[in-house]
Amino acid sequence: MSPHKNSLPKLENQEDRKISLLDLPGWTLDIILELLPPSDLCRVAKVCTYLRNRCRSDDLWDKQVKQKWSNLIGDVALQEWQWHTTKINTQSILLLQNQSTGSCGSFSGVWPSLSLHSYLENFGDLTSLFQKYSKMALLVCLESGRFWFPAQVYKRVPLYCYDAIVSYDSKTDTFRARSPNNGWRMIEGNIEWDRLRSSPVENFSRKFYLSDMNDLKPGDHIEIQKRKRKEYPYDWWFAIVGHLESCDENVNHCLCQQSDMLVVEFKQYQHGSRWRRSVLNRNVYEEQGSRLCWMGGIRKLDKEEEIERWNSLLSSRNN
Image (cartoon, rainbow, N blue to C red):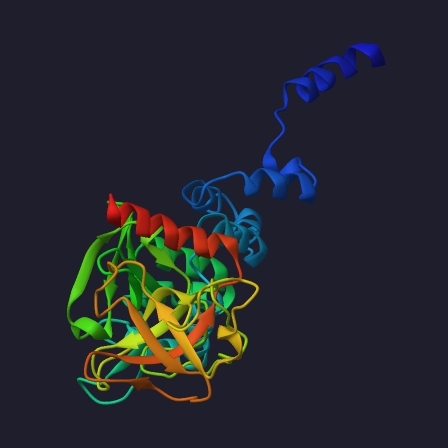
């Protein structure tokens, strides 16, 4: 038999052989895996050890988290997640598995003045992921609603947002929220994505937000802490810096920015309403108020998208 005839079957086998994922260069494989949804990534991870490690890498799952959750999971929520991850990784697996619920949270205070920053529940089956694949564990806990993370919830009537911890419901693509306003046991449900935002400051609802009011001038858009009683938590209210009653609002003559007094206008209330305007002292760096309400710190809004979001809520409220 000639050498030519002996080589034909071998060539035919090479042509018939199909290329698998394992034959691809690493960078090509990573591009393909980045295009897969989380459910398919989990399926591919079951094929072999090599693909399991590739499919569970923190870089890959970090992109998955950012793609869907980047507008909602901010620095405050990530710090809470790191708190849980560190606690789980420093405790023995046996101790965690022996817990009846496999849950933990960061608490401070005494009921009913309990401050709850986040909560992680029913994670007992994910302890191995926490040890090696924290980002994958994060997405799993977000999508399954196990991770109650800090966020802020917009309310249209009246117009404000409140601090809460929220949990995702994948069946309805909405959220549940627990807040100190309702005593953590009460849950608001069916909250849509556009009613949530990540916490813009590392400041929780009972803490005064220290800010410089001397920089504020009429027309500036702001968020101001406000509460009915001193024992209540703060909410963040949308407002605009207004003119003093003595000012004719002429740009060339306005001296409101030089005044010690600062006018805060809540445009969700009608003209003449006692809730429409409040006057604060710029030089007082503590809570100010009366029997009607108490004002805390002020956060000036510099980002146009934040202002547009508040104005959109105000418009939908008035329609």
